[in-house]
Length: 240
Image (spheres, rainbow, N blue to C red):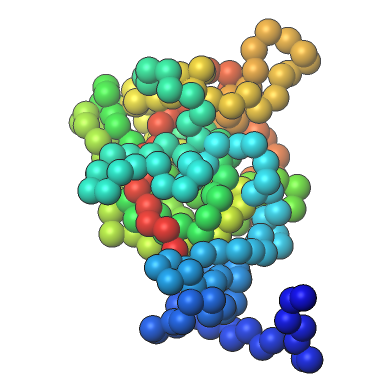
């Protein structure tokens, strides 16, 4: 027979992980909004989901995949909305000032430490990478992160590191804005999840786009469906 508590256990409310925990020690992380338990080696997030972001059980691609998808010591980039392993392609930005939007899921609490894009054909201007939370309807909501201006006038990987963007389990939106029309490394259609099928027609939406710099909160209207390749935003992260 299991042990019964005569009174409910008191779980500490803390802003960060306790020092020198014992196996089985639990606390509620106020910063991340999750309940965590120490297994002797790692802090394991056991819930709940972010109440304003209840979509983590969806079948969207995400990070970790499903735990950590890279071997120790690697510096490879993870594209959190990639589904398959088809060869990447390139995408010429559809119009100057356009912002692409694509959802992804976080399955365990993570800290994004680096973000990057790869410019394959330069065009005068800058790109900015954003991360937005999703509201209870799954729509883009509050802005959580905006990168520095990444120069698109020359080719190569354009990155920003030394970040500490903490994401609890749930659904998020990656938004990618460019002031010009560079060509960037992109995920081919076969590596993207089908989001919707307009009018039951011949091409699925793989992302959405808006015509200008996104604000905070995210736009509540003005999204157009995008049916082709999507810019590949790479991230590096650590488990929390």
